[in-house]
Structures are given as structure tokens and as C-alpha cells.
Image (tube, rainbow, N blue to C red):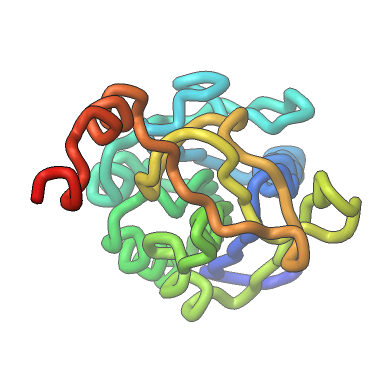
Length: 204
């Protein structure tokens, strides 16, 4: 929806492999073609493809500023900017919600893309609040690797149990029916210690 006037917040949400960054880049490029002043931001933690670009899985690229906090993002917004894009917004602190509101109130169109749920299907970071304050929400879906249906979940298949685990190889797109609760594997050394420990019965 590009016909609005003044400030506006658009959220592109969904699971991994659903085309969120691709859609973000598409909307931002349209704004550039319309000769609007555009700035793009991403969190420093997301360095999978490039540190100074937003990159989609089909290799579309857009120059971006990597920032550590929402306060840094706000401080780097230039005078006269009309559109602000934010990728992987779920990795930002809670202050990004107020930043988006400030920018929109100042007449800037804000387009943010990110995961709305983590691998445990829990709401991810500031996304619930952003979804609540946005004028427009687009829910993107991937293709389930098991049944080829519409997938909304990011199934973790390897790695630890930390909420943030950056890297595509640790995840698969899954639908509700094919989603499985992930349990992190124990490190080999920890398992070895357990195997050498006497059982309570043997100790008694």
C-alpha cells in the first residue's frame, strides 16, 4: 500500500525463508525509483551475507547501515529522509518501537521486516509491539520442507538452545503440522561425564 500520505509503519513478518528481505528490498526500490530519499538499517548481529547490505536469498542487495541499538539507528537518520527501511528488526532492543513511532509521527514511512516468532514459536523481541502499532502488516509464508504446504515456523534442526542463533543451516521452514519441538543435543564431553558417574543405586 503505497498511496498513503505522511508517516506510516509497515511490518513484513513471517518465518525464515519466507521472502521478508526480498519484499522489503522490493518496496524500498520502488521508493528509490519514485525519487524518494531512502535510508536502510540492519542490526550488526546479522552478518550472514554482508555487513553493509541487506541481502535477500535470491541475491537482491541494498546498501544499509549496520547499527547496534535503536538509539544509534535514530541518531543516524538523515534530515530530509522520506523512507526508512529496517531489516531483521526482531534483533533490535525494545526501544525500536518508540523509534518507529517517532519517525512515523515526523512524516516518515517506516518499513520493517523480521521474524515474528522464534524457533520455540514464542513472540520474538519487539515484534509483537511493532505489529500492534503498525498501519499495515504483511504476513509472509515459506514452503514447508516436509509436506510442501505453507510454512510459518522456523524449525531449528541443529545448534544450541539460545533464542538467537544466526545462520540458515540451523533451520528449516515448517508448517504447523510438521513442526517439532527442538531439544538441543548435549555436548559430547557433558554426556561422557554423565556416563562415567555412578548411578544412585550403585553409590548406595
